[in-house]
Image (tube, helix red, strand yellow):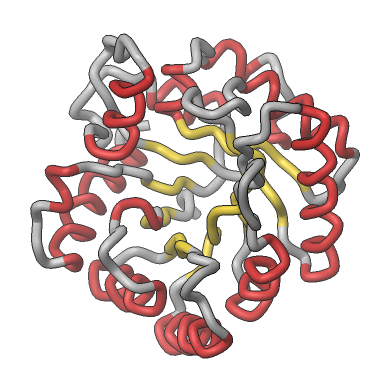
Length: 258
């Protein structure tokens, strides 16, 4: 049995949640990520996403994001309810809070709310957020004492935050329930604006850049892979199904080259 391959929500920001399932199915993806917008999501959205997943057999690998911040509702309760209805395996959590203790407290609360539904909550680090390193994410998970927690590694963020595959290898493999994969040029952007633009628009398909993808996949074997290729080039492919098919070829090649 090969790795489960998932089309990340960020690849298709112009596609509604239920349609994301249909697009993934039409393109041949066995799993998909779902984007949750707390301002527009409704019970009807949950029902329709669940129906599409049920009709197609596509797996909801994750739903995202929960992002606590100083100035707004993180919609955690609503997202967890939606995750339970659609059967998502993982919830993606990160934080804009500058206080790590507060982030840990909220992460622990989210894990508690998700645990009765059998859902894992992964803590993602991003160099453009206060929660910005692999070690910080691992500390938050450990300090929370959550039994349904884990760290989500996006290999672009791993590289741009200054960590390495060797840092990953120094941690327990069970900490990483799945990975997000893309590629990028070797050179790190020089400033915040460059990091943000690269993360949202400049990612490459696996094999087109210089990130140590094979090494990371060898360090964390067997877990599912979510292909998080946020790319202006991909978005310029107007048909979402063709866009998803294009990326799937690279995803399959990535696993075939191991």
